[in-house]
Amino acid sequence: MKLLVTEESGRLARWLRLLGHDAATGAATPLAALYQRAVNESRVVVTRNGRVQGGRLVRVIRLERQDLEAQLGQVIRELGLAIDEDLAGDVIPQAELPAVYRAAPARGADGRNSRDADRALDAAERFDRLADDIARQS
Image (tube, rainbow, N blue to C red; front, top):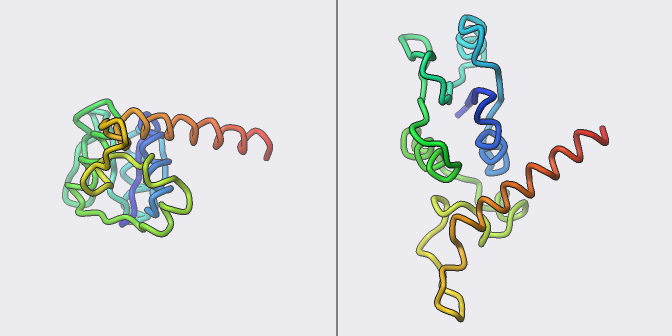
């Protein structure tokens, strides 16, 4: 499935790409340009912008929460997405994937959940920094 994630949710787009999905980013304004791109490229729009409305030609998923893990969960549920486990495992250690992608949580020797949301968000922040470094070097 092809997605068009508006720029205010750029981290979500990066995670979706890391997990094997075609997630492009784009500005939410002007709305006509956003809708035109979604139609031309057959993309579902994913946004937090309340002005973006779905319709006959464009499907829109309006993100309900601010946190990355909840956003991933919402997109996965609403679109029935699956992840490319091999690709995701090559890019991000399994323990750092957001919980929505993992099976039952693993417990460490100390009894704490070793796959919690904090680790996933730390991984997202590391990825963001790495992506920014690569962009600066290009």
